[in-house]
Length: 360
Ligand SMILES: Cc1ncc(C[n+]2csc(CCOP(=O)(O)OP(=O)(O)O)c2C)c(N)n1
Ligand SMILES: [Mg+2]
Image 1 (cartoon, rainbow, N blue to C red):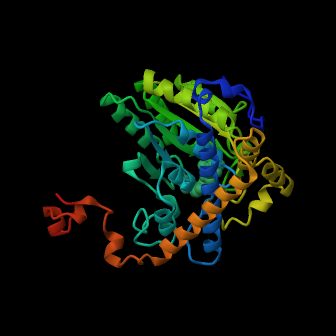
Image 2: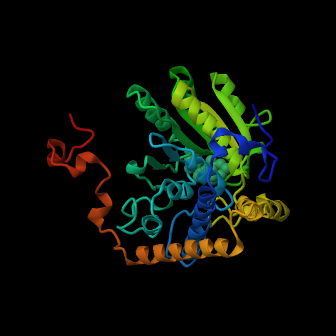
Image 3: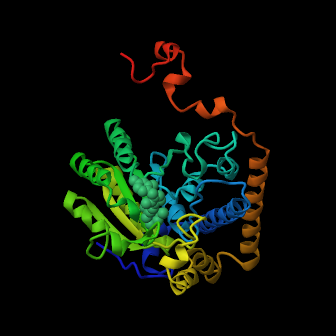
């Protein structure tokens, strides 16, 4: 079942997979456009973080964009997603606008979570994206719950639970896997293995044989493992897992090898100590976004001028998002406590007497 995670180019073999055979040139260009949007958005956000306009965390997906976008491109109307700590790219891929995401980073009321969530809380039930979760693996049982609801309601959808390699040693992930296996839940646990959780390398934190996904065998769950550079391959192998979920209600653990070009978040200057300069340079030289661009040019699907235009558009959209964020209001004290607990926002007996949770 495992593939070759070391493969680092766009290969021919997955082009003939059913999901790719009739994939149109426009959609291939769109994949490039969407990857560029993440990259330019995050580069713009990084400027404002460094300039002090954005506080807290800023985990960037730069280097990992191929995964969020390729996976989204094979998700259907009844599929759902959630993500872990590194979730900006997934939110953009799900279709949440750059403006509300940037405003959220700025902590403004016009942000997607009204300024309360910052970098780690972009969600849109309408787009079936149930947000990013800052606590490692905290969302893995939620994904099982969503999948359970789909199964109960006999909806032929699947849940993609994006997670980092740092989530795999949390106990709650194993509880979720056990339930997913036991109940036959339509969920794909998708580990984006970028080699590190904060400054801790996978090889120092995990006992494993060849890969992390293989642990799924302990729960009688199918698994897959491959590299994240080739959108044809990601689409093919993830869509197989999604079909298994939708049609047979069987879960899968998919591990995709990738690399983050920056630190675990922008203020992690230390990443130059736990990773060698050479390692980072080597991975940057194999940038999946650059590889996809080259593939489109080589195949005559795109020319340099059109690629440049798309890049410019992505940059302008990101700058417009900053203007949108800048124009937003700062939440008031009462805005900050609104939408946190249903009980305190509504006129209930508990809210009248001020004993929401611990009363008789
Ligand atoms: C339960 C828990 N412990 C510790 C942390 C602190 N923390 C924040 S990000 C992070 C690393 C996450 O690594 P990984 O899951 O590999 O995701 P990546 O940042 O590589 O995308 C940790 C340990 C946390 N958020 N939750
Ligand atoms: Mg990681």
